[in-house]
Image (cartoon, rainbow, N blue to C red; front, side, top):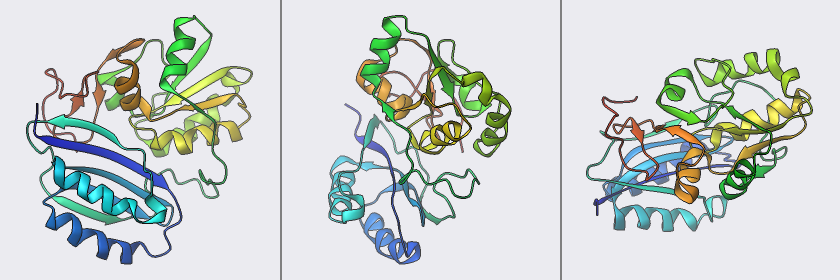
Length: 246
């Protein structure tokens, strides 16, 4: 079994002093030899970390003692080597850049659909629009069969194209999805605000879908933002992937 545990997790939660939190997190993660990126913003935390299993689990247990981060939804995968060159903790305005003031995923979330429920409904042939909120580079690696993609080159463009196409989603059942769920926490309620009322977000994104139900109804691999470039439905580095995905 590969020796390196990779984790991805996020949470939208009020962080009143991100700089102070960084000063606490950084030495702890460094002491454990972890590598990856943690983004901190007033709206929450977004983390991609890798290291020895005992070190990663120790860091998560320590983080769990903070009521703001207790019970984080952790997506795990394994690799033979650490897919990050260094450890970085960055202070940002948003943990996922969307630039739509007033949008608050905590107070105004879209309903979620679990991977198991989505697969059940797709197996039954229900008329569901699968809305890919990622960018063109990610979509090229793989996406759900017959997914709707509006061609945005980055997530900040998604709001502009959504305004142009939102009428197409009225009276439709829509499930938005992304890599790990974080972008849909903003994209789904934003699309709902444009009048498409029956919009869900896929809980845990593609990575959770792969973990719980496999590749059914999905073509290709899932782009990831580390040296693996993409993972397959077993959440292992895809043999077809090459190069570093910044």
